[in-house]
Length: 491
Ligand code: IMP
Image (cartoon, rainbow, N blue to C red; front, side, top):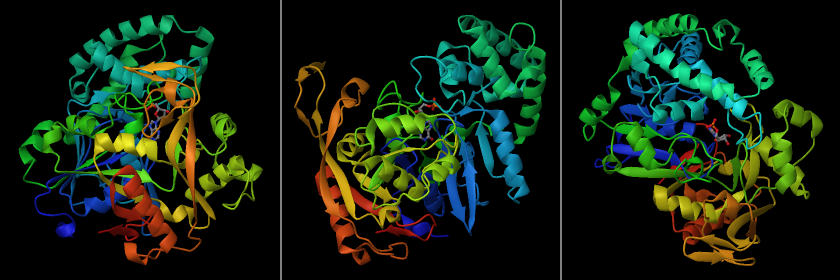
């Protein structure tokens, strides 16, 4: 169906986010899944959350690729992913009860395993100073173990002796790490995770973990295979869709370090995590949510609406969609107070973490970030969630920054107070001192969810899109005007 969506010379398409994630990737991957034969996730793990609306139902996935609903397509969890088998099996169970058997899923035998100790380390680290605001899903510690060369891979779940040997080695290393942790915090984390059954002598009961994970292996065995080889063999023959996770500004290599995730979620990292090379990708679509954007967790966010107050509120434990709505029941998009407007946008865009339920910090579209990230992802972009601000009378677009921090050396350049920046410098030390310079535009103030062509959009919105294209030197080929597949303009 719809094999003509893209020109015939495009065989491998990558969809990545140009911002800090949560830009509507799930919907776009689902949209392009109609074109693809194979859909692949290559990076990250259960920290991701993809929401897809289909026939009035909402699906949230963390590990299974977003093409899973299309039964005739091969869906792959690639070798660059850190995979928590417990989460995957939970997802498979949920999908099975909705009548989706997932027999079209393949799991890389060399994907990295997330084990209980990774969740423990992640959460203990997050309980102290220097926290990043991670999702607590063990992502960073699992990648660390991989690079430390004490990690386990999915294939180890299939071989009892290897599983035991490698786990023992890993836990020796992990115990050294945990010994430096505050025992009270450690106890609380164990309790919170409900891992009592794997806590034995020392901290972990190896036998209990081995038998549980070997059982997971038996369950997943029919899916486990050499997906790198499958993709290399089929590259250029089948239509392959690479599904990004998180976003370029969260990439450990290109993002606002250290407030990033632990994988390279840029296009290059995605290709590698699928066993391919960047040269194998024929086309990249970078997603930018517009005309607002979001960030979850800590880290600088120059265009945050409501600034520090918003950041603190969103980091407050226990704030969820429900508690926020109860406290601020009547905020609207006409709100004058920035903090209230940020909440109104969050509510209008349903910006609460699919994985953690945390409120996402909201900000205006940041062109210095887009100029930076489009150098990495390319010039073709999708603007998503355009319908969310339909009732917002004034739209602000950040066109540059004024640096207001202390003198700071960036390579051969010196930044001083008052300098203007056109392009984001992805260093937390710099970005946290960047004040946005805005241009203001009148909102379009009408419902666009039924519009299906760019020229039928309200003039004010067309002008905004043109402005972004010219100002950031990008081409917006795809516009999303609502959550459903059909609410997509791709010209
Ligand atoms: P981690 O990936 O759980 O280690 O979290 C590191 C940072 O990335 C935190 O700021 C998270 O909020 C952020 N992060 C991780 N996954 C996502 C995602 O899917 N969307 C948005 N932010 C994410």
